Image (cartoon, rainbow, N blue to C red):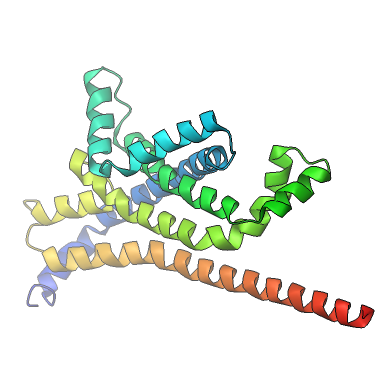
Length: 241
């Protein structure tokens, strides 16, 4: 507690606030591009997993099972050092983007697959009878209906991805956690552990909390819209009767 209330420790944190700002921006960069990559992979492999075609489902399962059943830290180390020893190092931030994107892409794939498979088969048949191709059925009919099922776990994966950027610490990253650790162990800044980690935690909270809040509001609005649609249909049937 004494360390947390130490004016000297907080003074060090303020003096080197640029370090935390750089870590915050690097974490945002890795997270933003990583989320985009994970969504792309999630949609591709989710559609493959829900396609009903054995080869495509098999490829999707291999990717999902291989990624989900190995630690993210191992994947980061493998990608970073394998590329480094082959003479094709791409840098820490690109490695982080690829690692968290591929890792969470496997979970996103399962989210999309489950959401698609939750839609009654009659919807697929109705869309096919109207002349929609596979992509058209998914884009116009299936995915819009499954979004309220997909949204909560998808946002959870986005929040987890942001927090998992901290794993870049293992390869000496420039993310928020890595720079915080460098700060608290530095010769000139060492000892300000409590304030440094409190600031780091607040910055992570700033990144994650708004996403959860927005997702909750969005989900509630979707449910209200669905409820209004159901009520309108009931009223229409009552008038017809």
